[in-house]
Image (cartoon, rainbow, N blue to C red; front, side, top):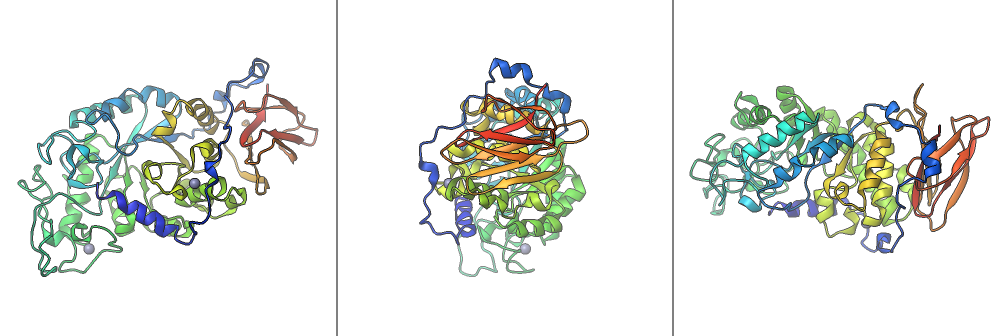
Length: 481
Ligand code: ZN
Ligand code: ZN
């Protein structure tokens, strides 16, 4: 629980250059996207998109902060897998599964015993907040039966919930809780730890950046720590793999060397994504280069937040993003457990702009993450399912920006030989808009596959077409039958 603040502090540090004086336009009451149900006339013209399956899928972040009911989360997720799979989800990202100091209240980011996945009686509970180890294994099996991979959230920076112990490198400090053994927060008895496995120690003062919980910040230069985290055949990484996990989401990677991620992945393989909480695309690129792992595209997230929400100016989308540098290494998102709990409006995309943000993310490159609370929100679900279908079909081929100004953004995915591609038209202005663009479609009827525009347009012999979009909304045009 104490771990919560680090994100807020960091978010503010990242955004420190922006004055708080900018008001968030999200506060306006806006009529959001219309119901995506298509008119019957248009329904007849709609191509069956399944024929254009481009193989792209999405990851579901399968939790929000302080999920409830306590002790039953794995069961809740289990019941949703079939629907998620049919909507195009190929991976689910679970919260950290090991027992944390806060016991049944822990969201897992305060790890105490890496090998207690809800089966040892410690920190006041046998189960974790999410359930028992058996329920976790059932969930993983069920996910695999639905062709969904399961991604573990691994917290390798700091530990919590150990016993009190003096550290000779912290003279006079009597409040160090670095003792982890069978009687002190590590009932499994595997990967017992003492003060020499944290900082400072006989090797050095700190890792790369020990910003938080440095007293119990794991030292990844200690061979013993490396052995237990990933090198041994009964290491944490190998144990998670044996439980059935298919990949890794590395928490707060700023607190240790990118080489840790590189070595972990070399040992156990699988999908990997790092949380490098930084809006600077160059920082993300450097981390990707050094770790070899994809990263969450915080640069894309903040550009969307600035464009749609903070400054109401789509030209912010011209800014640097990881997806523009390494589309195959960028895991995009428009909300997560941190952004949605953050009171700072500049760290979240407001409710009224959410679908515009998802429309952008799901038509561009990068591997998108869908946030549980957005998908399971019935206000959004139909729209999201529609956008996810477009993502896995028409959203393919090179990206070309056809128009960009403060209120309008028009982007074309060129498609491929037998895939017509799409044109995304976003409008954050208060009035409906239209503009002539050059499309790849010659003499075609085109329709908006989101249903926001109930019109059939015709492209000219050379591809020119007058596109339309409603106020404060978006349309995704492609060819009709
Ligand atoms: Zn160290
Ligand atoms: Zn905002």
